[in-house]
Amino acid sequence: MAAAMLCLFMMGMQIFVGSPQLNAPVQESSLPPGIRAVAEVAWHSVTTAYGLMVVALIYLFIQPNNGALAKYIVAQLVALSALFLIYSVTRFDNVTSLYLWPFFLVIAATVGMGVRSVPSFNEP
Image 1 (cartoon, rainbow, N blue to C red):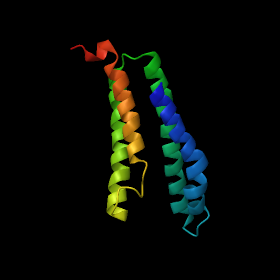
Image 2: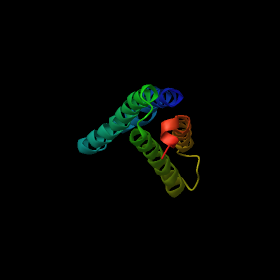
Image 3: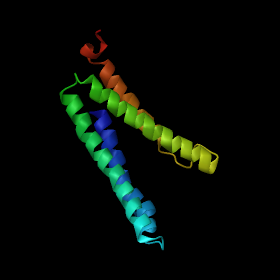
């Protein structure tokens, strides 16, 4: 459940902090409408992914014997972390400009700890 709450927090940050600071300036820019539309779809896709991950994590909390779902969620979080870290390093030459990557790893680790605490996941 902790992983779901952390993911819900990230979703809230995406909506209430990121939207005005990142998405709104792109939408208000003079970029062509097609580029702005794709950027907005991408933005809302991430928000949707957070929401679906919250639902999946709550389901996993209630029905913990779903190793495939847990592995998928961890893989998605590690991939997000890698994207943020790689782009931070390649675009800004540091690991702090796109600073959300450690948060994804914390959520992934929280899911992993939950999986390790369920006996049936650890049996052959």
